[in-house]
Length: 319
Ligand code: FAQ
Image 1 (cartoon, protein in one colour):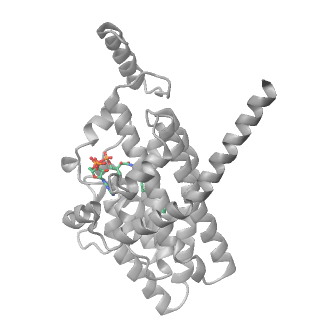
Image 2: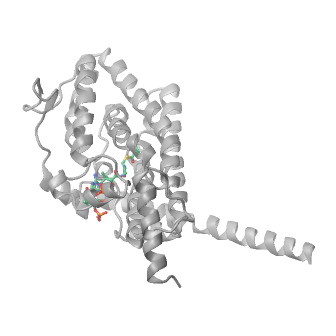
Image 3: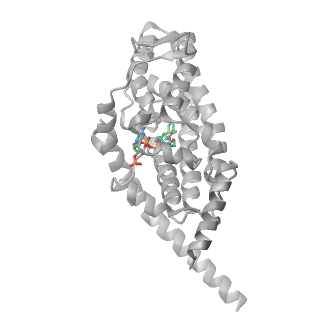
């Protein structure tokens, strides 16, 4: 039982660690609200990686060459790995992967809105790499310095792989743009569909983001949603020019005074409707995940039975 004095000392220690930009580690004392916020964000991130396997996974069987298939398979497997690092980070805060999967399947926890849009053409594989992984990198590189140690360390590995993902997407689109008129039209059509949902990945505007202020004070987030969205637009515009595609925003232009691009706002009503479960693929994504989780139950049970047997055998041997 911690006394009020102890609690105040622990709180001061926690705040000093955050102020020095040192890491909070699993065994350190932390306010309950901090623990809950880290679990919420990391779990949502983990779910995004796992659900994010589905839209691209749809194209593994239809990739146009062995090389493209091998690249796509590797990328989708990487996303599974990212999900596992992140679920492991939440386990250090006392929440199991089973519990989190239950929260995902029942709709109690969210995952990134972007994965509720369908992949209608093969160009979408390239566009996801370029724009979706590009947005993920902008958002996640700063998270390598997040205050919770296991999350920050997972992000370092994840970001290295996301950079490869982004480049493979860009290279795929570049190859299509050097191809036929039909291929160029496919790329443009795909970019038109994914541009606005990619901007939504950064979350609501700062004045409509209930969590940003507290998460920044705790060092969980190091930039606001709007700051990162701006960084993404500024990074992507020259890449679009080099690719010879048009970004579908009539308000997009360089602002000399700000030294940054001005751009239009995504449809925030659409964003909230997708977040609340009414996007084009929400039901399909969750049904698929639930089926995979149910189908895998026997594997988890067998692994647990094997682990129990191993530990009782080693107990007998040491008795
Ligand atoms: N979708 O107050 P805020 C990837 C929710 S990358 C759905 O601003 P916060 C890689 C938010 O949770 C994608 N929900 O919240 C990949 C909150 O609701 P809650 C994943 C969203 O947390 C690439 C409410 O709205 N990346 O998977 C979204 O401070 C290709 C209010 O929002 C991450 O998760 C959204 N877009 O800031 C995989 C990065 N935006 O929870 C496969 C880590 C907001 O209170 C293929 N996460 N909401 O009920 C973050 O940086 C933050 O959590 C934000 C949101 C910036 C996403």
